[in-house]
Image 1 (cartoon, rainbow, N blue to C red):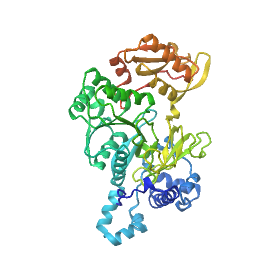
Image 2: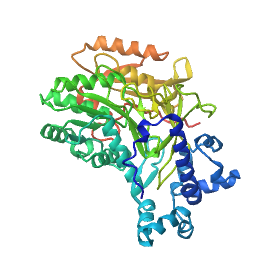
Image 3: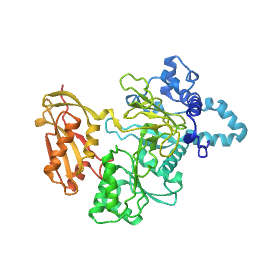
Image 4: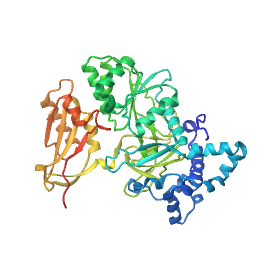
Length: 487
């Protein structure tokens, strides 16, 4: 099993050299592993009348159709399952056997191909889809995690807390393997579902970590509770967030709370990843007073396209569009040209990062989901598309609004009636409820053509229960309680 740990080209190479290396990696993956040994892509290439060699590089990916979530109903079809007799006669296997011998070759192939870890999608909008990892993939996971630590300017001597929920999900396992890859102390609390808020608070107060890796909503509630209990976390230097969107307002709130409990200089970075990529990416350590500089992509592991979601055509660098993902060095479950349904506001850039100087590609701006744009029937606005991504960002940026939840209902619970939008809110910093109500209504007016039907105020404990803090894998900030239309 080859090692990529000592090769730094992903962070320093020119775009031309990067493209050349990616072309080589893609050709090897398709020719040696994906096309001959995955049921779906083997059939796809036959149906298209092409061979793996017809895809010479990443530009030729446009000859292939996209892979969408709806195609993953039979996950086994996307797993690399080699035919023993065929793989023994591949030149790469023969060459390895000539220099290492048959026993070592057998071990190498087993480590590269045998699935030993399973993660899955969260299953919010569809049935969970399993994704398999071999030992080869876990090496990638460790390396990706190590790079995240470097980008965030962590230190192996630090103490890290992994507060993602114990679950077969990418976020938890990537944080875990980041600890082993970086050779650093990493304590996994299992999030709220395992130890609860009190258990997490006790551990963090005792450990006094240098860095916490968590979902933003859960960490926000932890910090609120720590402040209420007058606890002090004086050693905190980094907060790394994943699993949810991280609006600017959330960053501001987390920084303010961290300062109040004794860590005024904490740096906050967001990550972006998804199960199908089997990896995640982070922003680099920002300069003092500087904003995010984009998610740094590892070009030796993944190739990303940004497409027009309507036409499917690639858009120029720096233009918004939908993210499409192709792994370049994966085993286990592999999906080629996977349409994420994630929209990137500032597109992709290959310019050197103005903060860290790395030349790897970066995703710029806010990331939102196509599925968070919902069709609503509100008053006279029939069939209006409402972007709840924008509403989430605006609410998180609302002064005096601590935690919140948007609830969608039908008038009189009748599926044929108009829609109702309720905002459940917990004020912060003693904000007057009347003032906050006006601010929330005004914020809605900035983003959509209506105001909430009702704004309901709650205590912090009540809003935690509504959001499912410590109970759900992801806290629920937008819930849709509308009954299905029988027609």
